[in-house]
Length: 148
Image (tube, rainbow, N blue to C red; front, side):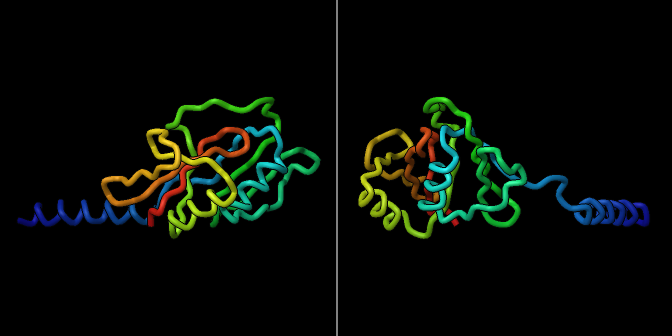
């Protein structure tokens, strides 16, 4: 009985010690190559209200945008043409209302689609989250959802 208690206590102690050490790494940033950093920064600030933050590389055509907390989006000018990427490669933003966001896209004549590429449609996942997709100025796929 004593050995069983010691073993259980050891597992609890080890579990607490591992938990107390915390996560090894946290997400910091994603960087994408763009044809025009100013244009892309304007796009992401307009549609997702991201804020431009200080770029530690003055004189280089790079824009850094805050995604909240310590997370950032880096827009690196240098892409020579529109990119072609798989639908699986995308970035995603959550909004309060897909319906309201959809209205903004329609008002700006921005084409959007569902997960399968059907124009003007919305995907509803099995968990109830709604998703739409559209392209940024360089052709990167951007998902907008109402996940919480």
